[in-house]
Amino acid sequence: MDAHWWSAWAPKLTAYSLLIRLLIDERISGKEFEALFLQLYQDDPTDWPVHVLDVLEGLFADVDELGVGRLGAVANPGRAESELRQRANAAFSRLSELTPALT
Image (cartoon, one colour):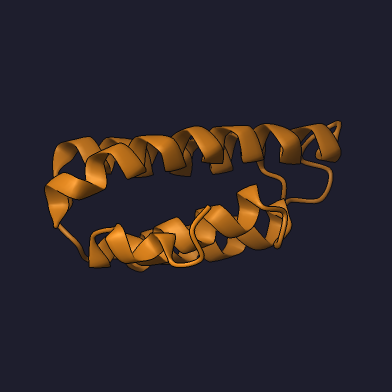
């Protein structure tokens, strides 16, 4: 992946794209991602187009469902984190397809 891949992304999506990439590339844990993503998403005042909002809301629901940051919330935290990385990767792919339309 190009060292400056995010430069092609719509500016408002850059924070999400970087955070998702950190999770996918295993530079942060699922627990760290959960805390950062939920805060970013909940504090975001952007009026996103519906197709972008669908992806972000879907990832929000995935984070909430898997609950990797809640101790004892899942029977197998390693599996939950792996599943979260897979879902984040799918969300990243969908957002990367949408971002040219937002610039």
